[in-house]
Length: 469
Image (cartoon, rainbow, N blue to C red):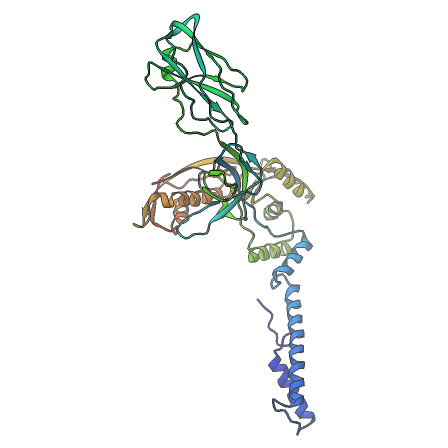
């Protein structure tokens, strides 16, 4: 509430009127027309005096937390060691696909487009990486061994290269061999290029076109292999790949801006915004989580006021406030006389409802211990994650397809669940509220779970599989 005492602030018009009145009182026949010298001079002076009054008004308001401007509020916070929470950026992993040997530098930019006119959310890599360049495998050699074995029929072989992320397409066929209760020796098994971790060997019998995995070489140096795999084992093995997954690399990434908009489900990030040109695809292989909004100015003002007005006696509210002032803590909940009388357990959550690391736990423990509260044993802990699957059925605007809204719905539900506090109940109405309002959604029904989900005081809900239909 601004201070409006007229003795502390006066407008230029009021100042000028008083100056003119004083002039007339002193010189009754003084000329006070708008074009008079006295009026012009007093008008200029009134403007300068108004600036002085304004400066005093601002200074007076900045003295008090209740009316301080944002910059002054920061200085008040510095006095008490309580800076505002600046928010955090969500983090996760990004998988790039493209030409072998393509280097992805730190800062490569990708994006999640929620569609429906919503703003695009940008992310950047925080580690670099190079896409493996194993090349295209050539055919291997094959001859029937003189050693007795399990193979009878006509056999052909194909080779693939493996990398840390997957596997190339198969090579051309080896020469066909026709053992009769013998083994088969493979030779000249090709070696892959940079990033190759091994080779897989696939076999087909009697021209069936069923190339299935019968062996793996876990290095990039061995060039021979002996096949004595039974037909029964072959028939139960996996088929040769039809999609190249070898030319991929996974790196770390984070949202460019703090906030919950950067918390997105697996597979949401699909746009190459500002990245090397030889890339053809990107996706996030893990959910991006941990994004936290910067603290609202008025929320920060109220937190400072609460700190100043509170006697700082070590109450549960004090412990929670002190814990939440530690970087990396989003919320804290104090449980008095837990695990025993004369002790208290403070359970903390990280940004976006994540489990804080051991370094954050240690920092909170140190901060609370530094308060030197007599006869209180303080235990800082996190929580037990309770993974919660959710299924919803949506009614869509006819102009939208389910694929248009699925990721947005999944992300909204994930953010609702992950931001629940320790011990908080997950309400079906909370899920509905999170989804209603997304462009294209006319209605939503939660089909699983079928009731509100209560949570133990030591546990916290986290999003599991979210199914949208």
